[in-house]
Each structure stands twice: as C-alpha cells, then as structure tokens.
Image (cartoon, rainbow, N blue to C red; front, side, top):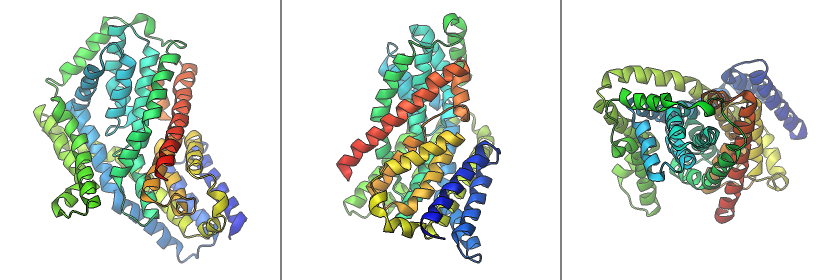
Length: 454
C-alpha cells in the first residue's frame, strides 16, 4: 500500500489507537503496540520483517533513553523524600516575596517540575499554596492555577521529565544524530517565557471569576499543616544542596557541549557531560539531602517505588519507538518526500496539532509527546525541520501540543481540581481553559524562536 490509501490507513490507525485508549480503556502500551502491528501489516511490510522492525524500534528506545528516564525520576523521588523540593520552593518564595504569591507559585512550580512529575509536584507544594493564601489573603484559585501551569510547562518542555526526553531521543534518532538534551533544555527554557507570562495573567484574571470551596474558610489549620509538613522533615537541607541535583547535571552537559563547539577535547568532561552520566551525578547529589535527614535506610524502598512508577512510562515510550520505526519502514515517508513542498507549509504546526489532538483525546501528555515524536521523526527533513536546532524546537512544539488541553480524562485535571478545592465545572473554567491559553502562548513562543534560528 502507498500514496493516499496509506495516509488514510495511517489516520484510521491513529483513530483506532485513540479509541482503544479512551473508550475501550486498553493500556496505552498495548494499544500502541497493537496499532503498530496492524499498521505494519496493512502498509505491506513483509511478514518476515515485521518482528525485526518491532524489536528494533523497542530495543533502540530502551537502549538510548531508559536509564535517563529512570535516573531522572529517581532524582525527583529523592528530592521529595528529603524535603529538598520543599526547600527549593521556600527559596523561590523568599526571592519573589509574599506580596506576589501567584508569581511565587508559578516560578516554584516551574522549577520543581523539572525533576518531579507535575502530579506529585502539585501535591507536594499544595500546603505551601494554602499557607500563602492564608498569609496574604489572595485568591486561592489564582494560586492554584499559577502553580498548576508552572508545573505543567516544565513537565512538557524540560528534561529530565520523561516525555521531553523520550521525544527528543526519537527525533534526534530520526536525524541519525546523538540526542542533544542540553539544546532541548535551552529551547525549553526560552519557550517557557510567553506561557509563564500568559499563566500569570490568566491566573490573576480567573482568580477574580472563580472561588474555591475552601476560600471563604481558611483558618489556622492551613498554617499549622504547613508547619507540620516542614517539621516532618526535621531540618530542611540548605538551598545549595537542594538545587545541586538539578543544576549540576545541566552545567555538566553545558560544559561538554561548549567544549565540543570550541573543538576542545576533554575525555573527562565529555564523559561527565553525557546525559546518562550527568543525570547519574544528579542522583548521587540527591542522596546528600537524604543522608542529612538520616533517611538512607529508605533508599532501597524509594528506588523500588521509582521503578514501579517509571516502568509504565518506559514501556509506553518504547511502544512509541516501535510505532515510529514501523512508520519509517513503510512507503509513507517516500510519499511525504514526493509531496514535501505541500506538507512543509504546515511546518511546526503539524507536530503541535497532532500532539494536541492526541492529548485532548486520550489525556496523557507523555503519551502525546512520545506518540507524536514517533510519527514526526521520519518526516523531519521533509517538512523543513532537519537540523539539530529545529529538531529540538520540534520537541517543544510537541510539548506545547501535549498541554492542550487538560480535562476529565487527564489525572492531573483531577489532582488540581480536588487539591485546589474546586468543583468539576470550575476545573474546566480554570485548568482546561488555562491549558488552552498556555498551549497557544507556547506555540507563539515556538514560532518566535523559529524565526531566529531557521
């Protein structure tokens, strides 16, 4: 099969995948793997070749990105347990000031969600949000939305969060190049500017329109809950020790890239700047706050918990790699190349829209990131995005789509709504509408960057 019939089959396959995940409640891993197999059969890949195509797509993803995902999640777990994540949040509050609680929640959410999943990040920081509302008498909803959006932006844009890592790996592999995580991080930071501004404005606006269930009756229990949370950690780690597991890996990767650009050879720096090693250093540094809390006895349990959490993500990520490899093995890429001039008109809009459709339909940002990257990777050069810088920007465009939008089929929607003390209808006015605003602001930011690097 080739040409238009193959494109139609591809659209049907994606629709079937969405239907199986959302309506039939089949696990994304099984849904993506099944659709990959069926699409390979329909597309005419020889039967004898299909097992190899599936196996190669699966193993290549695990080989290149599996350890990075596990280490990144482990850093987040260790920071949660030691109280370092809480210390990071407190530090940001002191920098910004108590008069701007929405801005404080926005910035701390964005920072904390770099190593910590947005769901758990919201739960961790929610006591601080409630305490700030009590102390400042500001809108509870405004602080909830600001925290939620800050967490979400970093979650979809900045490694070591698994979604952006997996998407970056898939796209750079599609170019036949080594994954440049540092470039993705820098793009993610730049692309966060407009959505962060939009989040702050939207939070201030919606905070005047919607009230939380607990907003009229915030008593001393909030402050007590916050103090009890801090007391539960004993003495919190210092700021340097808390930020080091995030900052040091970034600096190592930055130094390695800088020396490579300057054509200065340093085997030690190159070794330490490799993403797997740099993030492993972050894991080691994250152990120091844990040791200072005398909680090293919990390390094995924390590792087991992390592996339980990352297991499904790893398998979904690998399944996305399978789908991408199946697509690359069909004649669809050749057809796209023959019609590249027409398709390239969409450019960055194509991965954004595809990711947004997947996100809205099935709820998971990670699935949207991974699946879209697998689909787009074989097409990067044909749609005019075939350079490392543009590949990194494509990761961000996919991440922008993966925010758009969060609603009832997204677990994060329920975390924000429930912990924010809002009704379901208020969740749609705040979380759903907010993710639409932030997603569109992110897309605008992506295009602004594109005009400078194309």
